[in-house]
Length: 266
Ligand code: LER
Ligand code: MN
Image (cartoon, rainbow, N blue to C red):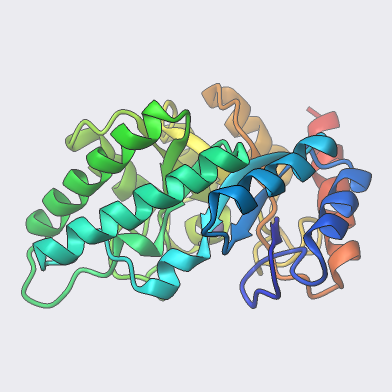
């Protein structure tokens, strides 16, 4: 997990120049990163992509921070604003393609359900926006993943089960789930059984420890989590999204060692 510039969120490698972060991630044994990007120009995106390729590191997910800063809302009750948000998201898909990223998330960008908007109306609008985004992304080789996010950060689709049900009900088959075990630990009835229930839907995974710090510093059983993911046939990236409270290098090192040990013990 890396970012272009200092990011106050749960981003492991948040400070210093991008090239340094890429080299550090590679040296520690990471195969890819989730990149928090503020790039808006295609040429700059191509250049970033080149640096990643030179270091043989994949951009597993590109989080376009510019979109939240602009107030993009994929369920805006104002149809013109909603369509504009879809267009802005699609422009960032072009950026992701130029970088060579695998996928992009829809987390906060789906927006809160506003007062007076029924759950059905909210879901209909989100389904419509996601279909437009997914069609555009699919033609450009970019995957779209919907992230269940806990109730303290957004007021809809908090649990993985509920979000999976939305994708099933509206038959949005090309959008996968981005499962984040931090949010699941707050919202779902057990991380392992929920992962198993989400079989066939999981596209990308965020793995902090239970306090959202480095893997190995808390009480999550990563061996069981990775085993459950394997059982579902999941073949995407698991990405460490955690606050670097033990320092960036140490948090990144501890996390990958914990995950590699957990994998080896299977
Ligand atoms: C939000 O809490 C989250 O988990 C992130 O993946 C969103 O960028
Ligand atoms: Mn996450």
